[in-house]
Image (spheres, rainbow, N blue to C red):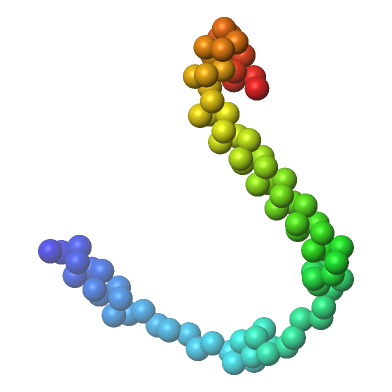
Length: 86
């Protein structure tokens, strides 16, 4: 019971500091300048599309290999170390 009273006593002496309104206003109200690297141009859209497709195919390939491992082992008569290298 004593540790709880110490915690309660430390919370009672907690002081809150005011937040400066100017720091909050400038961070939220000032618009950020558009940067060509972050704007959605045709070139950036092509980059996003290419990255999305490559991650999709890499994930799809990785997922199918796990399901096909038993069939690869039996069909090609290889050990698990060779399948792991694939």
